[in-house]
Amino acid sequence: MAIQEQTVTVGGLEWFYREAEPMNPSEKPPVLLLHGLPAQSYSWRNVMPALAEQGFRAIAPDWIGFGLSGKPDRRDFAYTPDAYLQALTALLEALDITRFSLVAQGFLGSVGVQYALRHPDQIERLAILNAPIASTAKLPWKIKQLGLPLIGEMLTQDPLLVDRTLEGGGGYRVEDADLDVYRRPFLKSSAAGRSLLATVQNLKLPQITAEIEQGLATWQHPTLLAWGVRDPWLPLSMAEAAAQQISEAELVLLEEVGHYPQEDWHEKVNATLLNFLRRQII
Image (cartoon, rainbow, N blue to C red; front, side):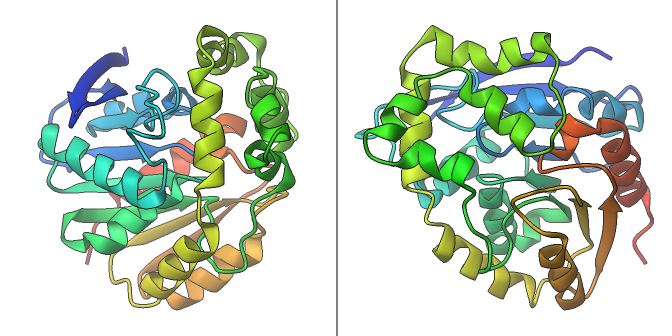
């Protein structure tokens, strides 16, 4: 199953996204996969073919400022959650995606959860993988330091920050060939580091987690909480508390998996996601 690489410019912002068309086209809503910090859509490379094989169109964009998407100056793009929400809204309109299932992972993937809560009529099902969904969530030091004055400016220009963060979030070694893809934007231009710095500085985690926590308490859509239990940054107790709040929630523990489940152990993610997406809604 080949993954297509596409670009589209919307509202002056250049988006790069990966797309896998279903092998047997159906009426199933597409699946949008959103990555966290400091990753890119490449992290879904082993998940998208599995979705397509089961009849789902899978779309995974690089957030603005990440991967192969545009990296505008902060004077042209604020790098705040609201700026990302507006950009995501415009992207979905440009791609004519009106109803879909959403899979959101990690810090910044949390913007996807905000989008779902603000646009419930567009969401078929919601899957959350190790994302900050409670006001108790804290930005881990490995990511927080990337937004500090002076030191953050230096660290975000070091391509090896990707190695330290991706491997630090799960304890697994990422293959060199894959790390080369993650590092490439930082090697190509200093703009990648500046975008990451701006994103971490403007993440506004207390505000967005408060919104998410409040919104999930009244959320009525089928929801999967698939949690890597080895996540050193976002504890399982966060997912357990959310599962008790959400009326249609299913909690799945991903044993031996860390903060980046799709990178750590995609086979477990594939099995869990497909079981959730294919299950009949009563």
